[in-house]
Image 1 (spheres, rainbow, N blue to C red):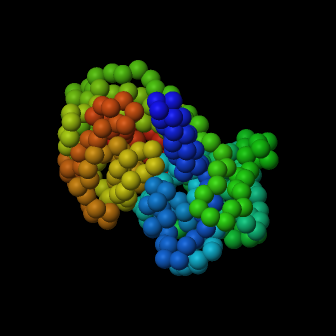
Image 2 (image 1 turned 90 degrees about the horizontal axis):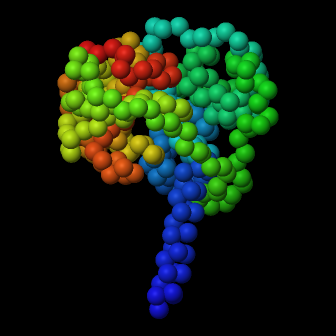
Image 3 (image 1 turned 30 degrees about the vertical axis):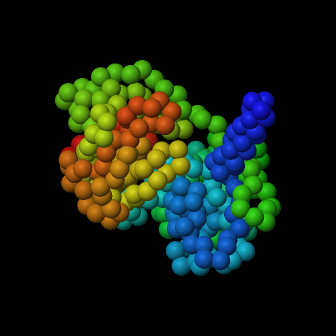
Length: 303
């Protein structure tokens, strides 16, 4: 009996891991009757803007049953870049040196081109002065980094042709690297009080901040709430964009107190700290982005 239960348990765990693996990779989704971009984005815990960019859809495009959509790999820097207000860009110049032009071909999207040329969608948007609502057209000229050309053929997105929900394409490796943990400088304002700060580098660049259980998470720079929702791998998140175009990303929240479109002044309660599912500790991850690229959260302006 015990041996039967063990085999049954192992089978269940294997199926669970396979399904989880599929959900967290690039997939192709067949639209069902009643589906909307919003409902699909909630199912896969990404933003509507990411779905549009991956499928070259405008805000006016309507989904049709049977239509196939690419569900992109979750990338919070892309989500941040696409959530920004196009009329509220950073004044800091974007480095457009070492670029060359390519021509958009049939089937190209911002997402597929960024994968092909080894760029982030945020970088592709920035160097071409495009915004989150941009739809590219066949024959359009776009700039890409010359350093990415040699890897273009190796980085093309390969999406399988499937008829139902999801199909695994590739595994997204965890590229995070954790640095030393230090105690916060009392002269620097953070979203939580007196946190221990752990640097997070790599594809995800920011800091993890320790917090008391259910501690209030406060806005450290006033701005417009651009996005509120659950984001894959980060739990509940809030993005706040300052008037200068910087976007402050508060992630791993246990609860959220603000809504999209609200203007949050400094010290506004955005929500509460959540419990990290891996460490089991109360903490949040905090990031700041300029032109879609992460900057040091410790040096980012405070209100």
